[in-house]
Length: 383
Image (cartoon, rainbow, N blue to C red):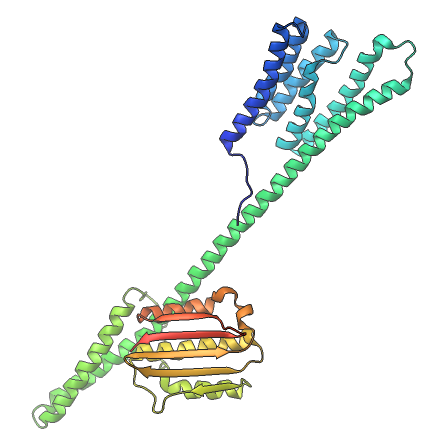
């Protein structure tokens, strides 16, 4: 999630220093140039100095400004330049403290508005009716209220943005964790299945070796055939072992049921059709002879692809194609439904599992929308 532009910590310090430094400079320069009497210049400086800490220590800064303003009410009966610190302080407390302190400083601002109206109009009390006092009070209170409202809005907006950013980061972490867990589960399942493949190969080797040993003396040709079978099975099993070495994990309960392969694809097609899927299959006859691991992968990809069609594509025409030539097996499952919209960008967890299987055997898998509507899963595996 793209985060909104904000001042970094260095920029915030620079802004606070610039604002407070400018106000202090005007107070000191005004005093030196004769614009302010020394007492007024000193009061303005005392009111502006706490603004250096308005962001990091808003409550302490507000206390300093309120104290200096109280001294002004005792010493001077007219508005001075230092009054600018009041709305800045109210905004800062409402923005950088919590709501309770924001209401507190707003109340202090209203009290200050009442005191200031009385103090500034007292020399003109003769002939001054209550309308003038009310007008002064409302004007000052409006300035204070506006500063408080802006600060409160800034605080709530910052909290909302922070919650959105945190939520986006949490969703990204959860998505990455889900993808990782899906890949781990798929690898564990592949490891269990390959355990059966390798165990089958080794059992064939043992049986053939025993048979060759007994047949060597009476039937040398039978022994030769057994040794050829041992050699071929051993190479296939060794290849599968090398491919799966990085994925095998200690697993219990691997199961002993025979694993399906390309020979079971017609049954898978019939099962899908029996479930009401309009499926057209283009399968070679006879079925190609593939290594057990590759045959299992082809079957699982077809199974998962048809399952995705059932779950996501709705009522759709489906075509399943299997080809085997030039040392490569190719499997395509294409539908004309709405699977592309149901699986955004082709990143469903089932597709992650299929890609894991194909990658193990050095192949490639592509999955994505088809021009004109629908979805395609295409696997290419060396075999």
